[in-house]
Length: 271
Ligand SMILES: Nc1ncnc2c1ncn2[C@@H]1O[C@H](COP(=O)(O)OP(=O)(O)OP(=O)(O)O)[C@@H](O)[C@H]1O
Ligand SMILES: [Mg+2]
Image (cartoon, rainbow, N blue to C red; front, side, top):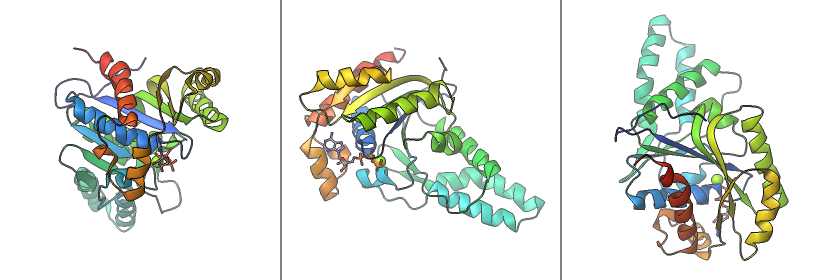
């Protein structure tokens, strides 16, 4: 078990939660609904959402305008450092914190950081390391961090942070979704792509066949922490571009995510 190293504004350990899974299974919808639930519970402290998907799904689901992505910050650093002398390079490193803060979209009750795309080809490991270090330092100013990731965990590990407390794998009720969940488990447990304290599987868009789906999910070997039903309000909000954080508290998706948060996330907090 990996213990959290950073401490948020409340003086308690920062909760680091990442969401991953196959494309299109509902990772972003789940992350957005979980943000709403966490904000409603009043035990979240300062919340930072990190969109680790280059397609910027989370800002769209929350209707947040992103002025600058971390990908753009990275491009600027690479371009500037190419023509910088040693002294200017040092100044550039001193400016990193400021550049990352500029990329932070501050909302009324949370902040959002979008990783965006990386255009420049080639290996810029030192730049990635610098930026990841800056994000890790920034994360200490928050009490809860929720990352909307991709199926592969490399993006999170390389550009966001090397470890999380909780990794939630989202799958739909298909064998392909569950196969990806098995791959994620292997990446964590055998390939150590990312350090994580615990793994949970959430089954999305499940309607009336929970028992059958749970039996199929047992082959993955990850604890099933909850089922989320098909929720027409989620589909409707996404259709008209209304933030998922504005879903009514009694909508089936929000109720289901609320149960997962209470039973699996908040119940483990030290009181
Ligand atoms: N429980 C649900 N009920 C109804 N619609 C849902 C539900 N979960 C997700 N959807 C819909 O499914 C679609 C895909 O969801 P979402 O974008 O969250 O998936 P994703 O895993 O983030 O995809 P990507 O891999 O492209 O980032 C969206 O149109 C969303 O509105
Ligand atoms: Mg997404």
